[in-house]
Length: 382
Image (cartoon, rainbow, N blue to C red; front, side, top):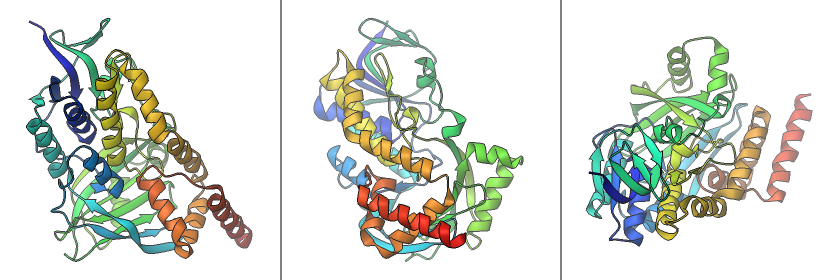
C-alpha cells in the first residue's frame, strides 16, 4: 500500500516546521507528513539567536507567543578584526532560545495543527508525473527538503552540495554568565579571517558561546579542526569556559539559493540559506519554510516555479547585497570601517543589524560612507 500525502516535509527544524505549519494554516484539510530522523526534543548545534525578523515570521505562522517566556536581549556589542568597537541598543530586541526547546515547540505546534509527525529517514526519491515517491511507499504532490546542512533530500534530488568555499564550520557550547547579562557579544578575529567568537545570553544565567570560521581557512591552518576551533574560542572568550561543545557546518548563501528540483523544494540550510556575513540562519529558515508551504498550497501543479518567485521577491535584493558585502568583507579593513562607522552613526548600526539578521539592503549613501572610511583607514595606515 502506498500512502498519499499532499505535502511531505523532511526535517523538523525551523524550516520544516514552518513549511508544515503554513500548509495547514492555509489549507487545514491538507494531508501533511513531517518526518525527522530524531525524536523531539533534541539538541541542535546552533547560535540559538532569534532576531526580531524571526519573530515576525512566527507571528505570520500564528505563533506570536511561542518564545515569550525567554527574556529579550536588547544590546549588541561587536569588536571588529582591527579592534573597532560598537555597543548599542538594538531597535528591536533579539531572543536566544536553545534549539532543543525552540524546535520542539515548533514541532508540537505543527502536531497540534493536524500535521502527522513521524521519526524516520528518507533514502530514496523517485520523481513521477504528478508526485514524488519516497522510499517506494509514500507519495507526495510536494516534498519540502528541510533536513539541514548535509541534506539527504538535496542529494537524492540530484542537486550538488554547497562548495567548500561557501561553507563555514563552527563549534558551539554553553557557559555561565551573570543572570542580568543582556548583551549579545561578537568578537571578530583577524587571524584566519573571516572568523569570530560569540556570546549570546539566554537570560537564565547561561549563554550560548561559540567560534566559527570558513572551511578553507580552517584547512589552511593544517591543524586538527577541534584544536583550532576550541582553542580560538578559549582565546577570544577567556572568561567563559564552555561546556557541551559541538561542531556544525554552515552552508553559506552564494547569492542565488538552489530552491529545489521538480516537485522537491529546499528550505533553510538545505538550500544554503545562511547569511554569509553573520552565519544567521533561523530567520531564513522560517521565511523559506513558510514560502515553500505557500507554494505547495497555492501552486500544487508547479510548486517550484512559485517557490522560486516567492524567494526572489522576499530575498532577491538582500541576497545579492550579502553576496557583494561578503566579497568586500574578505578584507578585514572593510569590517573595521563598517563597525567604526556604526559606532558613530546610529542608522549604520541599525542597517548592520538589519542586513546581518534580516532581509536588509544597503542604500548607496551609506555604502559610500563606509567606503570612504575604509579608504581613510587604509591611507592612515600607509
